[in-house]
Image 1 (cartoon, rainbow, N blue to C red):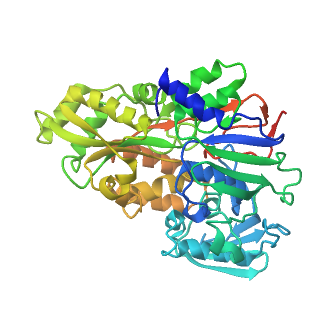
Image 2: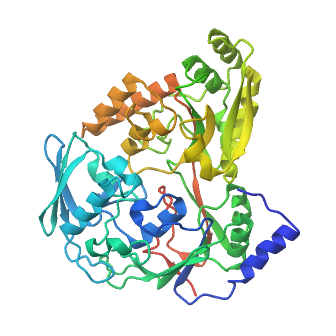
Image 3: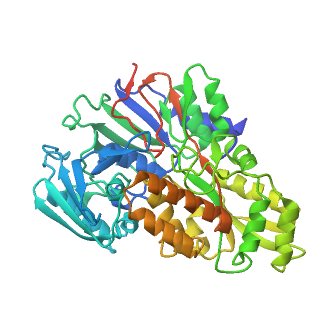
Length: 500
């Protein structure tokens, strides 16, 4: 994220704004996003800006509420067998897709089978790997048979890529998407805007209140802020943290913030030196002041954490403490590991993600006191998957909130986890056992205890450094009524209205 550039930079930002300053039609909400959407097919979306669009057009079998609890959406109810391996979903009757087709079980089966097909390339396939079969029992009943017991199965269907699509429109999702959501696709101009309009047949009566929503793509952060200040847009989605105070000071705007499980951190490759030695990982951790990183990287808009489980979650282990750096102990561990004079190591940071660059620079400066000499290397974020993830010794990355604690930690920390094998290559049998046990119980107290133990083990073995859970902040015109930010970072607009 960039700081404001006055003079020519601000003039350029305002020039961008004037292209769309004229007032929009009454009942049309205008939202600014920073990155162009590359994918309209919900199963294939991968970035936050795309998730905003997905949430407007599509529904899942279940949905995530603002307090991160899960409730029915397209499914009106579900039940599980005693062994948690057979799950039956009853669909809400009378739901219409945007092109008029009535939702039925065959649409659900087609959606899930497509996600499970490796040829589709959906990231949601990882979270549905326990599915053995999915079948339509009758037009309004879907049955899943699982390979393993899985207590949180219904929650997965509230995620971004698992939204239900019409069986007869799968082939045109990328050009003429059709869903069941509160808004319908109207037009898409890549790099400029995406327009959606009210779904008059939405199954929740009285929603949406808006006539239309326009998502404007404005890459430059200064231009997005200028557009909000001028009234050219109504909501600045996921605003830069350094802009929060300026928005708060504007009498026509407000900064709407919410705690999230979205996290950033320093990824350490546990399979290659020097971070294959737990003593080295612990030494690095002992140099880190996470509270200071929250201030430096997020301008205070977040909270230190031990893992992807945020302090705002009921499973967060409050017994663990954020201790101050201990440089003497860090040096002792490095000497025991064979690095009495410290060591040099490169660390890649994504050059387009200034927040994560700030994390990397902060860690570099903190680690120096123990003799860990880090060379920060800015690389294009687009090259991370091919050249950095799972290969580099040390780099900065981060991940959006997941729909459940299991999906937030199992793929990342279990030795068989898909994200683990793309990130830190961490192996710890005690963690595997705890995560496996948590999947098999419906007892909330037991699950809380298991995930509490998981956090203790992660803090003990330091797979990597999860620095913080970041707040999600939207800049909002005071003309917008009924809007609240959500921990999943999409936009809830079905009950929003706007003053003329």
